Image (cartoon, rainbow, N blue to C red; front, side, top):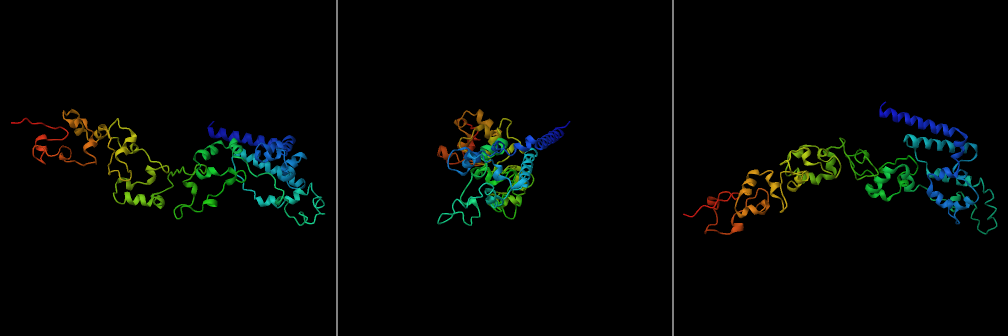
Length: 373
């Protein structure tokens, strides 16, 4: 049996188990208890269980359950509430998504729900000169209940990987709580709800590059992005490199070297090493600009061994030389690539001559010292 078939069978069993449980009286009654709601809604229950003058704790002292407020009136409301809870349980098992429930839909029914217990609310203040309950449309405009939403700690119990990604790679998204983007469970917002169309003209689907909204700066291209789109943001870089010194690199797609945004493939994925012992990271010591690989520069402490990868003859001559040149690094004389300094830059005028040193001393890597005659 393949792994995919096993997963399907497990999901079917899980769904049937949930349906079976929900169809029993035990399951039917359990979803209306405060204990069931508290499994996820720890934020709300902090106010419900904390002694004080809050509306939530007042309901607690009178044993008012969550369903007294959060389900509709009558038997129809109870059925609708339990149906909605059952759907959410199934979505948890199957990984499906649910549309958001508008906040306004709940607030418009606040007064009706309150009147289930507080029919005499107007009588309690009718004797006041200014009756605060007169013509009131929304009880919650004054009597504010618990803070809405789930804490990140609660969300991470089931969604540990997204929570970890948001914490370590979330960027500005990490400053928002889960409920900012997901006001109801399973709701996936559009990026343009907050960001607008950030890359106009070249991109329509944000998730073609930003595949993980919990790590938005980790951009994985795959085969969906071409050079024309990259130029929208990186046009200056391309023009000042490929445009001025075009090489074979200019003919390949950007994603061949940059499969992930901000990262560069190792050079040896395409190119042979200069020497078998050369480390992968050493390419950039000389070829510091990948867009212009023929522009070679290096630090003053570059080792002879690295130079020997391309210049083996000169390195061999220098290694066997008995002259003081053998103690110097290649970069000591060749401070820029392919630059051959004059001997007088170090030695000054010797033998009354300012040029023609190589006539007697031949190669600087293998100095000769002819005997005087």
